[in-house]
Image (cartoon, rainbow, N blue to C red; front, side, top):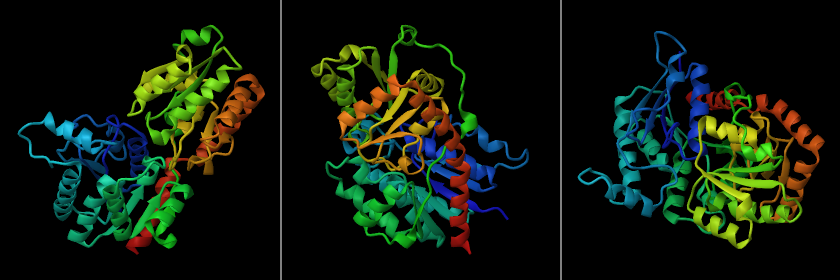
Length: 402
């Protein structure tokens, strides 16, 4: 008998702004492959979500369907951005604040749960926790909450929003099991939210190696002239450490003049980072591409000589795995969950820009080091798979249902 899961999320490719959507897609794809039946609830009006993979299990049966909750909620949305979003939707009935809209999503989740047939509830991150709680209250079914990031990560050590914190804490307290994406996050949940360690299960994120394109084409003119490329990919926001990336770039460029630093992404610090780049006098060696996805992002991974993830607080971090899968060695922050499972990577404290610069220079100038990191890192990827993550989730479902 198939296990049926009612799953609440808040982003899904191709309309994702960060790693949460990628994680949801990878995990659900692997769960479906294990014959888990999923109803995925999403606060979106999107009609073109890529769920084609969900139809290939059987020609007669669909193992997953979407419920789209009409809402302006979107990933990494703050109160100011939310108010701006609803101002462009006159006449529509939305919450008058971000937190009112989160409550509206929760009520919708409870109402939907009464109409659906399922065995267990699975909610991803704080915007979805309320919906998961309401679904549990209405049906008595057990709840699993999946913590991809906490407010302490998003704040980057610069303070938290107490309202978000309370929603996160309530979700973890009322859940029957709490999934976290790393031991790094588990420690935050125990120390800052007071959740019992016995209630928490670490399920690392993964990657589908067979989805990656290893071919090389459309190589940039910069590379043709013999220059090196150092790549940052992610939201340009405090949590991801773009300021440390730029400061280390300054130190590298004081020793090497054939290096370009590329930032792929967008975020609230984008203008600030551009201004700091100008103040440091390295604007001619730093490129901003904006947010990239799909083949354009894959091309950037292949183009790079080194990928750097300097995150201040990274619950996991899928981008280094994507870079490795594209044949690019990686340097990652020690303050990340992925550092727990990736051994053939250069590692550094996010704040130590001098050491970060030293390791960048070593990787760029010493090709045997770079080749070893890449070759051995590729061998690790099959062990860091969504299939393994899905099977751990299934074990959690089974233990709760039994």
